[in-house]
Image (cartoon, rainbow, N blue to C red; front, side, top):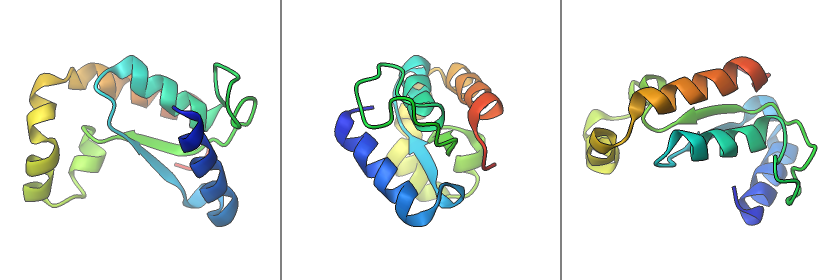
Length: 108
């Protein structure tokens, strides 16, 4: 997660409270989504950004997860995400996100 996005997430969390924030990722690889999710749950693993050492414990999901897919308009989902869903390793992404949520999210 780039430094600017870390600042945005931190500011929104301070403004609205961590229990009111859900971070939705769309990375094409499970590892990239996992690193970004780790950043907003247990802190920046690279110790480069403002979230280094900051455990926000935010709720995290990926756009291809069934929990997200089930709450959005099916036509919009298909138009915006459907093609990517066909080429991504959805199982691996879901597994990575479930692990991060299970270990690090405080506000499920």
